[in-house]
Image (cartoon, rainbow over all chains, first blue to last red; front, side, top):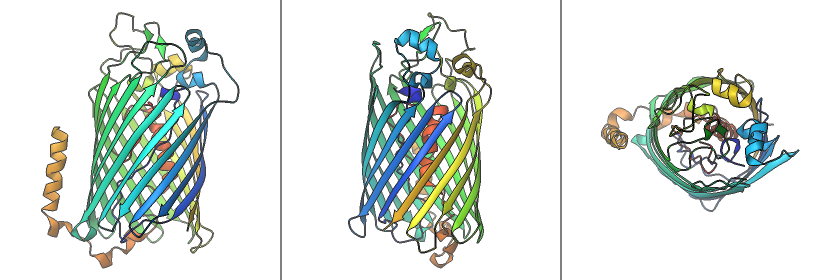
Length: 367
Length: 73
């Protein structure tokens, strides 16, 4: 089951932050589980596994596997079950409704000045196939005070709704990132990122519908995001990081995202933190007052994400090692997420807002 | 395209200011070696929440990460 309810691997190919080491390629294995649950009835349990193996001083290959087990009525992930059942002739099943297997293969090079990485990704689920490739390159300048990064990814996905619909089944996305890292002084580092995102194909949900029929979106979308991120050393036990992002696209959605995180060492082996994130966005140019769309409208919106709303997130990260020399690192986080009240959320989910609780847990082993 | 050009010009500008931009000597970088001095203190959380925000909000990008394949945006 796809689109909104589609919980999926996020393949992380970070453009590296400024490094102070010659090379950071290390052998590492990790095992973990992520969870997500919200008041719309969505529950997701995602076991993860990753293995990174150096081939030489400068080369590394890796494999990541994520399994998303989506529990609760999968149809409800797209909205009101009774409504959708009537259209899709679908019935609810108990237990895990959909399981996604999402492997990623990657390779990385790092010689201390230049770092690069590339990989491929494939995932399949009941109604969606994702195929992507990605690469990035970063070079350091000015005695490691400055780093320029470039990243590109391209996805070619296929949508196959669980019930017959005559739609364009393709969805393509290209993403380009350019980043600049700069050390400001001995305790402060800043990063600037620009992202260009181009999406085309079937961009609405094949399941969401209202009195005007199924959702209808434009078949093309181009977005731009600008971010500034900062990292501040406070003292031996405390540091903080912060970020701001401005986003806009040709659907006339504009958003601002702000985040601040404080990290504190409780001991030599235990670190705890607090993070607060705030997000606000405007509506798309084809979004009208909820419930006013007709079949004569070129575009029709059911998804609340096309409307104006705010959200905030409060979280606690935790990191622990049994000793400073231990090869094992344990990581845990818990976050509470909530949107503002929204008429679209009310119409589809029955609640005034979405609220969610999500956690992550990882055990890393360095060898 | 104008954004790309602007970014490229900014990059070139920075590369032309190497003396100004060499602000921290190698022997002054000890604080950046602190394990807390990272934008993604928990990689697993970054991956997980990146996808959650993509599903729950209409924006994307600005994070130097690749996120794709789910049709969630």
